[in-house]
Length: 295
Image (tube, rainbow, N blue to C red):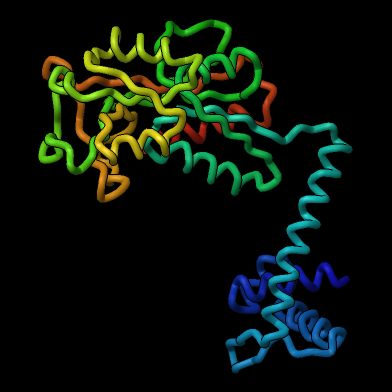
């Protein structure tokens, strides 16, 4: 009974009134009020100070609310673990995404999916194109969001999401900081900062040099934070994917549209998974990605 009363009490505090809390708990308003009063009688302390149609928490109420939140969360985790064990159902979803993807669709998709399935375990892996390809090929992730550098394979689901322009991030103190667009040829005197593991440096260099067309020196960072620190400190420029209209990430970094022979360099982004996905609700997550990328 105490666990149910904890749930009722937490609902009242979260909703800030008894009516909405009762609706959320599928009981009547009088019933939830009676349960809170019974809880106070059992504890021998006042948890809520009633003020006509409003209430405030007593010191004991604040403590009970914090502890109840933790206990109820622990109970939910326990119940989820038991259900998964009994049902032999793996509710994990493993997602790979580009390390230098600078837009919010992936984050929004994860947030919506987690709200819809609070018991689902989401595992996220970032990497450059080749690492993401290897993760999917070896079955270490269920879904990969990646730029298309290869012809589509019949062994995978290949879902086109969008085409984004390639941009560059530069320091606000860079000589080009007053510009909004820049030709890739005009970046030849500034090192191109790429994010890659040691084993992936050659493939990233080949792609950005031979295919995209960067012709200056190349330097490598191991993660996005390191790369942006290098940009901020004036050690080079960094190609990024995502909309140029996204607000600047800080007052020290600016994003420029990147042109090649006067044309925007578009990159096609796709969701990839095995033809017969085994992860938890893979297809539903892909549908959410499609919706987010259309907005």
